[in-house]
Length: 170
Image (cartoon, rainbow, N blue to C red; front, side):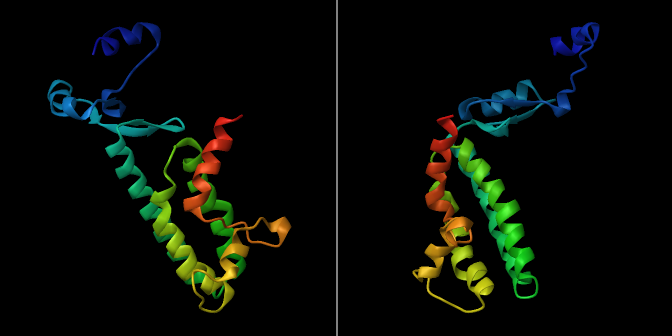
């Protein structure tokens, strides 16, 4: 509140309705009572990382993976007519989004199980034009990079940890 009062002297015009206050779970209700003009949360995605408690992180990841799973399903619906466009949309857009999250958030690989299932059970069989079992060797071939005759569509549950480790080693 004090920043709102003196900030204009320095050319800073904060807007409390656009600000967010991150607090621990036990302090949530009191913070909402004391600062009604702010959005009060126990966690939020912010500048390439998640700030907050594990419960808030898990809820946030659950929402993101649900969105990506639905997006893979949507791409599957056009795969028979536009296979190259569907593959490109998955590989160049969606996959890059979830890999970014994997690079900046530790230990979230198991949260991508629904995406893994949707890729293995719907997207890839439709792309290949025939149904197959999840243990079919074509799934393993799809994991490989393009330069090794693969599709560069890795299993998101197993690629999360290497993505995270490679990002922190730089």
